[in-house]
Amino acid sequence: MTFKELGIIQPILTALHDEGYTNPTPIQQQAILPVAQGKDLLGCAQTGTGKTAAFAIPILQLLSNTPAKARNIRALILTPTRELALQIDESLATYGKNLRIRHTAIFGGVPQGKQTKILQAGIDILVATPGRLLDLMQQGYISLSGIEIFVLDEADRMLDMGFVHDVKRLITKLPQQRQTLFFSATMPPEIQKLANSILKNPVHVKVTPVSSTAQSVEQSVYFVDKKQKRLLLTHLLKDMRSSRSLVFTRTKHGADKLVKELHKTGINAAAIHGNKSQNARQRALSDFKANTISVLVATDIAARGIDIDELPYVINYELPEVPETYVHRIGRTGRAGNTGTAISFCDTEELGDLKSIQKLIGFKVPVVGGHPYAG
Image (spheres, rainbow, N blue to C red):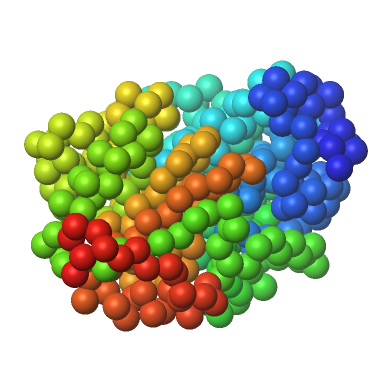
């Protein structure tokens, strides 16, 4: 199947062609047509499946096909992190470059002046994180009365980050008559209940259960003493030479500390997490994408929206406590037909986490023995 067969209008097809996109991913095949027909949708899809395009493309098409009734915001895309908001806004710019659809992303952690100036000039699509959206609504900069399409993205992450109360508050401000698209990588009971409360006869789309890991990713685990992890990481990174590696830590402090230690050994690295300024986070991500730095150290929340083409390595410096997070992490590599490598470090305190991960994915991750720092 091609994008043309999905009935996508020519301006968007041209933009997709310019980006080298020809064949939609499974979730795009299943979601684009019903969304373009104005139907509600419940999508269960993990990271790396092409979910953003699955809703961005038909939203752009719907809004371009129907003239605006007033200078109101017509579509709201609610997402949990700044990185994901920026990624979605960037995708809207890419797919909609031949359309007269105005859009912007708003999020906390930066001064609001630039954001409010764009809002006052008028936009069609707003991508927002819950906190900044509520704040600007209370200040009178934003009204949701004209929303025709509402997208709740990464609903399970909203739950993890404690945003569900804010999401429910925002939903009460939306028009009753609207199209709603709901996406989540996992469907715990509270998320399913929320979906049931806001969707009307939705089309169900499910792509690659969260318990599965891509066959294109080669996985391995190194047993290592906690105090030896940095030495092992340095040893592996020097073997990888200039290959880009995304390294996960559990905490912001741990990410910063690890970057400092890597710098001492001559490895060019940067950290990305919630305590960094927006400019610092974007600079680190841009440098990583451009291969100016070879190692990006990230926390899970900051990394959720990172989309990097041809990322060779993901390294779990510390195993996640939530086993589904492991699947999300390693889904950053081995994307779009490429192969990738996922390496995990495991100390004695993390053996329970490893056991939970292996139970979820249904097999034992191969152990690498005989390395210089074997624990």
